[in-house]
Structures are given as structure tokens and as C-alpha cells.
Image (cartoon, rainbow, N blue to C red):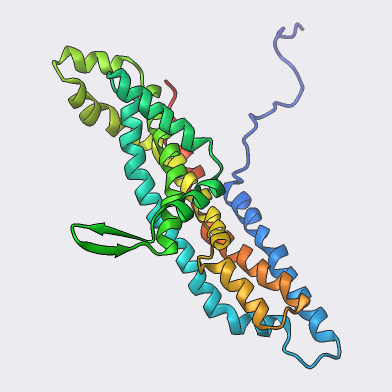
Length: 281
């Protein structure tokens, strides 16, 4: 009896099907906050185990927590305003980089590269010390408090990065889009606003959100120039408690935790949008 040349008695191996681990991975990453919480509780236990009759670290932190949260809301307000200003100016600058006018294109490119490669802290000091304390607009004196200057200083690097995001998104589209619009007698302006930029939105959204998360974490730089945000209020709270060393780790760990809770969902949403809007030219 002859056997079929392709017949075998070996067990058939089914195709490998990967296990869905997206939700599991997200759950694992949520545990990144556990060391921070453990640090707060551990420091509190050490502080309370001594013979000192002062309040424990966690009790002291809970007493100052409303003030620290108010400071963090101010950080969020600065980040939102700086992102709005930077996005508006950056959009104009990015479109300027695509202009057919050589002077406009070169000027936009120079401004983009200058502010994109400048240290954020230097730009912050630049805005704080070179901008006036008040401006006169048609006879009306408008004061410029420190937090407004800090917002402007943080909006400058955002402007440059948004400009580069827009330029890269437009250039990433196939050249056939421009050629097809030209064949339909669209002007360059109509092509840009009606065809090109709408297609670029899904490409620009993930890096724009990532830039906002970076900006939010950079708002603590405003504490160096005297703006009363969460880091400044944390230092003042520690000074009011007499400079207790057992409070340093819990207080700063709490600041880390609230920034993590705010920025982590943005990072996860950015990753999800990158997967959803992934495009192969």
C-alpha cells in the first residue's frame, strides 16, 4: 500500500492567534502610579512612627491639598492659553512656510527654526524681563501680570512646533492631490483650504495632543519666575510647615501624581488616534 507523498501523521498546527492584550497592557500601565502612592504612604508611616507629636505627612498633605489643587488648575489654565495662542500663531507660520513667495517662506522658516530650537526656560525669561508691565492700547492701559508673560513665553516654542507640524502634514500628502485640484481649476488658496488642510487634520491631531501634554508638564517652569502655580505653592506650603524634611517626598510625589493623572489619558488617547489615523502613502 502506497502512502500519499504529502500525507503525514504529524498533528496539524493551527495558525497562531495572538491574545488580545491591549486592555491588559493599559491596566498594567495604570500601575505606574502605585510607586508614587506607596512613597506617600511610606513616608507618612516613617513620620508617624517617631515620637514627634506633629501631624503626620499624609495629614499635613491633606490639609494643604485644596491649595495645591488650585495651583494645578492654574497650571492647566496657563497650558490651555499658551496652546491656543501658539496654535493660532503656529498655523499662520506653518502656512507661511508653504508660501510661493520666497521672502515669506524664508522668514517663516527662520522664525520656526529659531523658536523651535531655543530652550523653553530662556524664552520664558525673555518674555518675563523684556515684555513691559503694562501696554497702552488707544489710551487704555492694560496690565501684563507675570502669568500672562509666562503664557506668552511658553506659547513661543509651541508656535514653532505647531508650524513644523503643519508643514510636515501638508508635505506628507501625495503630490497627486495638488495636481488633481489644479486640473479642476482650483486656485492654490482653494486647494490648500478646501482639499489639503482638511486631509491633514487627522495627521496633525496626534502630535498636537502630544505637544499639549509636554507643554502642560513644562508649565512648572513658571515657578522659577515667580508665578503662583503648583510648584510655587508647594514650596510655600513646605516653608509654612517649618521646612520639615519628612514632607518633601510626599508633597512632591503628590505633584507628580496629579500631573500623571492629567497627562496620562492624553498620552493614551494620542496613541489610539495614531493607530486609528495611520496612513500609508
